[in-house]
Amino acid sequence: MKRFVESEDRRQGVLLPEYLDDYVSENNPVRVIDVFVDELDLGQLGFEGVVPEATGRPSYHPGVLLKIYVYGYINQVQSSRRLEREAQRNIELMWLTGRLAPDFKTIADFRKDNGSAIRAACRQFITLCRRLDLFTHAIVAIDGSKFKAVNTRDKNFTRASIQRRMEQVEASIERYMSALETADRHDGELAQAKTVRLKDKIAALKEQMKAFKALEAEVHAAPDQQISLTDPDARAMATNGKGTGMVGYNVQTAVDITHHLIVAHEVTNIGHDRGQLSGMAGQAKAEMGVETLDVLADRGYFAGEEILACEAIGVTPLMPKPLTSGAKADGRFGKQDFAYLPEQDVYRCPSGALLPRHMTTVEKGLTLHRYWDRASCQSCRLKPQCTPSVERRVTRWEHEAVIEAMQERLDRAPKSMRIRRATVEHPFGTLKAWMGATHFKTKSLKNVSTEMSLHVLAYNLKRVIAILGAGPLLLAMRT
Image (cartoon, rainbow, N blue to C red; front, side, top):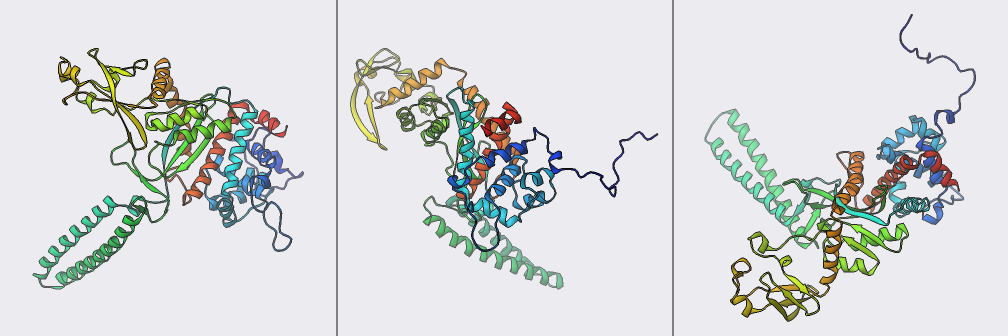
């Protein structure tokens, strides 16, 4: 008696034909993809080829190609060549496309030519989530993360990096010249072969130096004094770890704190988050369809103008203020040790003296007021703990009250930053795990934005299926 499950004979005929539909269960996510795409108005979203041409070879319907991509990104298959193979052998994909198997060029061109429409389809799913009342709390967490581009660090040049590489080439030339002089002092075939090899290396290095000098001129002429050879839009970006910078893009996301759905996203090639807050908050507010929105962010987003802009559009930001004062680092009183008294428009210093306003100035477009009292400082016993200057001056922005109100809100909600981290870091970790070591497959900011939208759509689809189940989601899509 055999103790293993027996397989069927590959040459055995089947009496009754099996339907392809039998291989796809009722709760299979592929059914959700099928209904979601079928319910989209592809023409209104801007997809090309919705209306077929009257002449020529028939083309694939854009809905079929969109289904292929959504399925591929949900299953971590982003390459057009791999999608071509999957369409020929994957039963789920055969069911989804009706056994259609486009070639990789057709698949790749669809993603390249329909970027804005694919991003609109991603937003359409957020509209569905809003209709399903998944955004029960008008609170989002915003953060940015660096994603690798199709561009190695060796193919990215800044003023500092190209200067460093030119110095390395010069040092190598000097080293080979010294070795060549030593080889010339010896006779024999081995010495002659070494001499030829060293001359070839020196000639190659001199050609490389010419190329670097030409690139140096291009770098200096570039608007941000940086160029990337493989992906022209990718930029060198610093990361937290020392010496772990990368060439890539900064992906911004706004994540719902209840279900961790990505309600808004944007790809930029700016290496920092400052200046991104109001734009991302405005997008999230519009996508969620709410009148007011609370936003959690880290101190990398802190900028007075951005906080003021958020207040103007009905967004309430919550983030810590970075401690940039050198006084605190030196063991002296910081600005936070001075209390502002709005009724009198003065600051009260740690010794109890009142510092009146003496002047107003404009710096970098900001109107700043300055407060001090030289007489009080001269006779103050705490002056060594306050300032090494003649008097301590305190600077106040004309809209500083907005920042103070935000700090007060943060003090009343001390767990906000922990909630922010637990909310917004989770999608980034998931997406990077799906993408693998090389995050993006495409080049240029436009194409990378399209690719990111497909990742976000796939992530949100899987999240909603996990939250509601495939059956209820299918029913909601059809109604």
